[in-house]
Image (cartoon, rainbow, N blue to C red; front, side, top):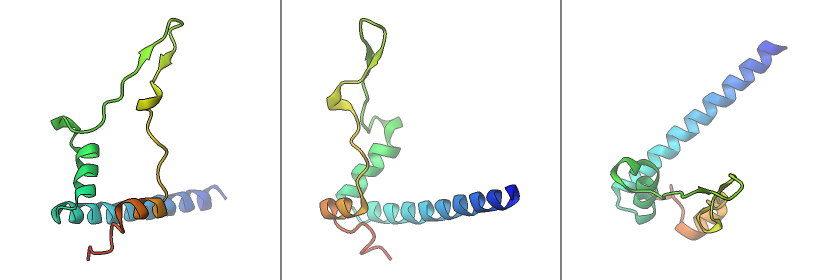
Amino acid sequence: MVQKHDELRLLIQDVNEEITDLAEGHLVAAVREGKEWAVKLWLQERGQERGYGQRRLAFKDQEGQMVVPATLVAQPRMSIEAWEAKYGSAGASVQ
């Protein structure tokens, strides 16, 4: 039984990797096409060593607890539908 679960876990991991590779390929293609949303996303996520990206500030309060100001807390991830409504279909023109 454990072997079957391990095989399923590995299959899911492989499929996730394949989809991530596909999405990354579409993102790179969109960057090469000069799509503003793609350039911004790439620099935000991959350009941090060059000074791009969001800085997350945190400090300790009087009790020593870590505090992150609400205005700096990351928003929850968007659904595919919300992303496409805001930025357009990411892979529509990418072949």
